[in-house]
Length: 570
Image 1: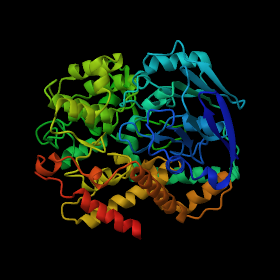
Image 2: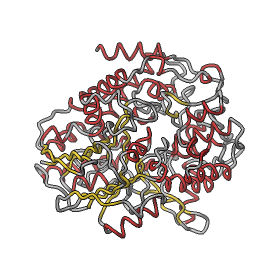
Image 3: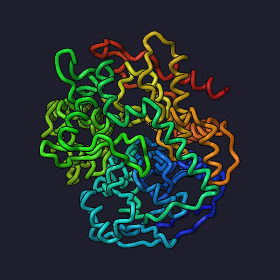
C-alpha cells in the first residue's frame, strides 16, 4: 500500500489517495500518458497552470533492486507541444518509495516561489524559496542540504527553468548528492518553473514494506547474478555510455559539425579521444572513477566521475549523448573541454542534447566557429544570465534555427535529434520519427543494427519492438540498460513485481503495458493536432549524403506511418 499525492499549489493543500496492487505497477510513463489523456490536457497551454506536472516511481522504488529506481516526470511539453515523459536515475525515486509514495501531481501554480518538503513523518510542507533563487544548481543543492539535512533527495528547477527557458530539465540528486541526474528533455524544467516550484525535497528513510519481502530480496539477488553474467552490462560498467561514440565514429553515424559529417576522426590516422576507450584510460590514470552508480544498488554502474589532469573532479557524468551533441556536433575534440562545458550545463540544469544541437545551429549561422569551446562557454553564460540573446537561445534548436534562418536544423517535432544520425542509424531514426515523445532515442534505441541491405518493414519492426520494450521499462521505473536481462528473465521479474506489491500479473503484462503506453501517447498527440507531416525528417537528411558513407535518409513519414498503422491493427 502506498499513497499518491495531489498537490494544489495555489491553495497549498494535499490530497492523498491510497493505491495497492496493480495500481502500483501501471505507473511511470504509462500513468503520465493515461492521466494526460483522461484529463484532456492536449489543448492546454503547456506553461499555464492547467498543465499538470507528474512525478511517478515504480513498484521497486525504495529497494536495492538494481536499475529499478528511476523517476518519471511528465506533462504536455512546451518544446514540442506534444506529450512528454522524461526519466532520471539518482535517489529521488528511492526517497519516494521509502516514504511509501508512488508519486504525486503538481496542480495549478503557486503565487510565490516555494520549496515542497516531503517528510518521513508523512508531512508535506510548503516553504518560501527566498534565498534560493537565481543560483546555480550546485550552490542551491548545498544550501538545501544545509536547511533540510543530508538524508534527503532533491528534484530541482535550475536558473533557466526559473525564466521558463525550454532547454531546462529537472535535476535530481545522485548517490553523492550532486544535482546531476537530469530528467532532461522536452522543457519539463520550464513547466516546473511556470508553477513557481524551486525544489522538491524528499526525506530518505528506510526500505518500504513489501508484500513478500523474502521473495523480493531473492529476486534482487538473482537479477544481480544475471547482470554480472551479461557481456553488454560488463561493457557499460567498464566504458560507460561513451563507448557508443567509438562505435558511431566507426560506422559514420556520429553527429559532427551540425550533422554535416558522421565521423570525427579517421582512427587509422588519429586517436579518437572523444570515446569510451580513451576517456576510461585517461580517467583511471588521473584518479577519476570510470564506473559509478547513479542509483543506490545499481550494478550496471554506467556513470562516471571525470577528473582533470590534477585529479580533481570536473563533472559527473560524461555520457554519450552529451559527448555527441555538446561535443562532436559542435566540433569539440578534447574530452577536457567537453567535461568543463558539461559541468556548466549541469549547473544550469539544461538538456545537453537540445543545448548542443542549438549551439551547432548557432555555429552553422556563423555566430561562432566549430571547435571553439570559448564560444560555447559564452553562450552558456548568456543563457545563465538570462540576457535577451540568452533567453532566445534557451528556447531551443528549432526556435534558434528559425531566428537565424538556418537551413540545416536537426529537429523532429521541434525537439533536437539525439546523437544517432538517421541516415546511418536507420532503426533509431525511425523511432525518433514516429515516437510521440519528439526526436528521442530513448523511446526505442536500436543503435547497432546494420540496415543498409534491409527493407523498411524489417527496420521498422525492430524499431517498434524496441519502443514497446522501452515503454514498458519506463512505466516500471526500470533503466533500459538492463533490458537484455529483464527480457530474458520476464517470469522472475514479474514474480518479483507481484511479491513487491501483491499484484497477480503474468509475463505477458510487459508487452501489454508497453503497447498501452504507446497507444495513449499517440492518442494524446493526435488530440494536440499532430499529423503525419510532423514525423518527417528535416529535408537535409534526404538530400545531403553523409560522409564517409555517402548515405541519405531512405524513408519518409508516409512510409514509416504506413508500417505503424499496420502494426497498430494487429
